[in-house]
Length: 249
Image (cartoon, rainbow, N blue to C red; front, top):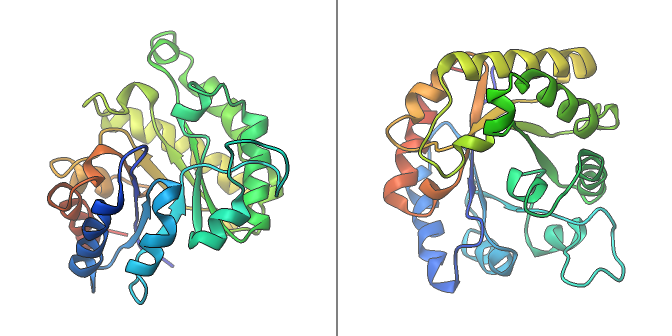
């Protein structure tokens, strides 16, 4: 059965209390649209946003979590803490974590299991750098990330995979249709092989915006979008949600 597109808003390190009206307006304007919408604000906003969005269909998520359930990990946040704060999802393995915090695939896999233990639905990100693509390494890089980050331990669980070419994140560059379809074919092959009929949706991320959302979401196999900068304002984000509402599933 076709699945509704998932539109995930990664606010990254943006947003304070004054940003709550943005979330409320998104909830109001997306009511009745055929799209799953999830907001991933900074952890400091999760409890406030959960209260503000109570009774709406908007889901909330964390931008990362620790692999342990609790312990002496100064500055970190556990999956159970995110759950307690109102989250139902979590982004893991984002390139800004993989590269900026040197997180290896094995750690992403451990975090995914921690998320599932807490009842969170992980979005596991993979993607190649510009150097890797130019060196012709896209397929082996994605294959390794899939094998080591999206493991068989996830079988039977609810999760998503997001393909985000690192060179397209926040740059204004967007992968070509051929590049996206090639990556999605590889990812879908891995997921179908290891997860069968329960294989999850695949999202695309990387400079998704109002002007290209309808085209990207209409590409074969694209089950949604992980949106960065364009999710920070109602004016930029709502056209993406509306594009999902009318996109083929």
